Length: 123
Image 1 (cartoon, helix red, strand yellow):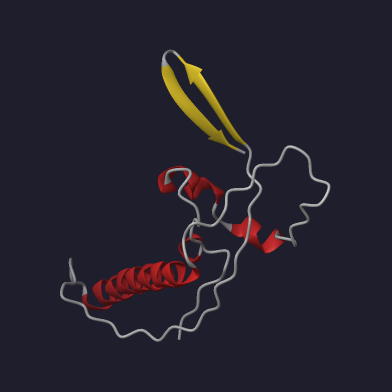
Image 2: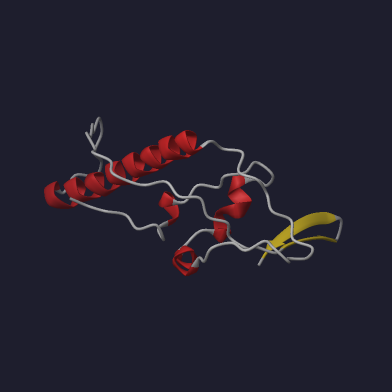
């Protein structure tokens, strides 16, 4: 049996469509462990992106991520054990047990232009 932590980026799904998924990859990782309940009362000048991806779709994306990661992991194990250069037609049956929770990650997004190109910085 193998397990993945909530801090593993494959177990984190961006729940909005406002920004490109490639750009928000930098916000994934260990800091999820530091999350705390969101208190928006009294907050000033905060923009919170609503979740636009349904919880069931997020769960399906998680299943896909785990299956891809497990396929890669098992392929590497088989290559190492057999000395093969490649493993193909690998079919896995994976049992899933996970709980989908919503989490907001505070991120400052700074858009700027430099030499005629647009950039976005995620802090």
